[in-house]
Length: 312
Ligand code: SD4
Image (cartoon, rainbow, N blue to C red; front, side, top):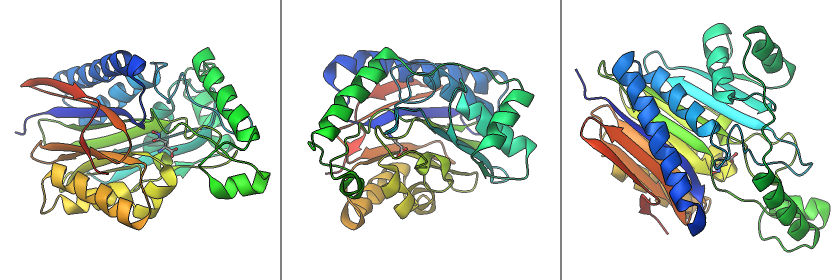
């Protein structure tokens, strides 16, 4: 029997001081809810789903309720889940109005022959399986979006250089708050999941790492699990989560986390975070953003914080 553990994150990014307490409460609560599921049903995938639902329902995080908006002012959610026992996975991209996109990702994993769906079918599935609908826009997120859009229109943005060129202007984005969770249960099963509104002012139709298995999420009972946060394009190019899992064959999760972030810095740039968990229940967290909001819980107790190991 292995010792169960859950680790969750609420996003890599700036995390201004006045949000710290609420964000840390949020990740702690998600870890508790997920851990109680491992204790009840004993199943890592259920724990991951529960933790992510808790984070999606908390408007401080950029997932589910409180998701950020694209350049057109619309929400387009990505989410994915992976079961490390048979390497089964499900992902959804570009959905709006579904209260818990992680549940849709799980439906895709369990009820279809596909891994990633976007477009009309996810909505049909959500209706068919009676997933709850919700308006996910919050006034907080709307005012951030308006502020950033204004800066964008004034050409005061540093990011998305090619998009800016397309609009002959700059595009700003807030890279905080995507959510992710990793769990190991007493039977040695490992699971991972993630959910996001993506990056503020992303182009409509843009899909980030959170919907891409191997980049945003990976879980394999033989290796461990990882989930990424930050600039999705960088995570996709680095196949960040799978790379971290491969490194855990011969490194601790902390060393694997630090190494993939350091390599990403060298090869594609800064702006990423990752949490990891191995099959022995050891965990790690690293980031090149200002902060990474995370929490872990096991039978020894909880720990949470705004930083893992910062790799500059
Ligand atoms: C994305 N990786 O869509 C997500 C954004 C994110 O913390 O993680 N923000 O690129």
